[in-house]
Image: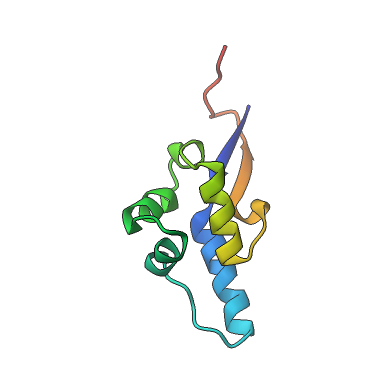
Length: 89
């Protein structure tokens, strides 16, 4: 069984690494929220690593996050394969 997980903290870390290499200031979750026009609590909720994160991410919001962070979709989402995942009929 496969599951898609949202990895916003990893994407943010990668974005900040790229920013540091360019001599730019790191972006915080609050700054990200402000730049894409959502509440900071929305970003905080998406940064959680539970199974609901990826399923609650609208595509338009994902696009905004990717654009602001300047990362790829593979940096924001990961596919997890495991036997411990629930199976659905």
